[in-house]
Image (tube, rainbow, N blue to C red; front, side, top):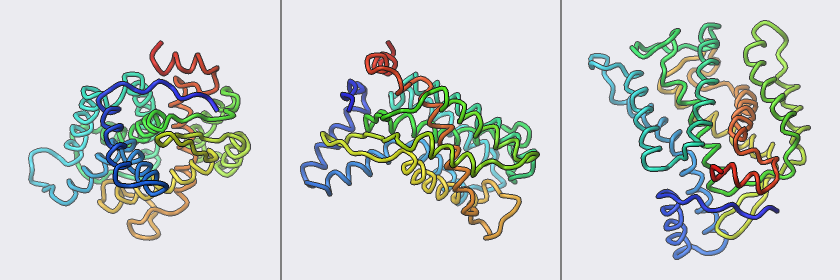
Length: 291
């Protein structure tokens, strides 16, 4: 296993260390490790959690008579949150660039999917382009934010990482299929098979305190897709977006799990464009520290 990278020297890293000391003081053994795992996962998905909380709270309290539309308030909240993350160094500048890239690709997909009638945003708003509220791009960015932060917080290593060129080609094929399946045969199940074949030997090594754990990457992607599917149900429950074909009222069809599973690989490879875990260790350290 590769040696751990240098710790991320920031206010958030200090908070993580203090939290770890508090947990270890009261909990020992597996229970303490499990609590730390859950807390670090929650810390990693902080941006997405705040966005979901804003969606829920605004659904409960917002009035159509208010001066600012709910979608616009969500957009301004997302911008303010992103700025605060950078000011308080909850994200590095390099992570912010990665998240921006995923924000752009996600917004482009939103424009196409809404125009194709896959889903709609029923409420009014000023900050809309092509019938898509601009806060929606931050929902995709929250996936990128989680991916970048969880890799850093758990000091993750991916071994053996497959040929990066093949990974990039797979990500491009997955992203393209989200568009082309409207006109050509849907290749999602073939792409799922491709992810399993390409990453079948790839194992995530992650650290909790001084203990290292392992999980196959495809299994981690499946668990993450379930979490994203649950989060998406919050959006449909609040009527923030509506699917054209709804078989179970607001409940998102379980088939969407496959879409999220595939999209996670696009996010993962987008995030690792700069982290490049396939590089030799000394080069990977240089990338992570900005060298």
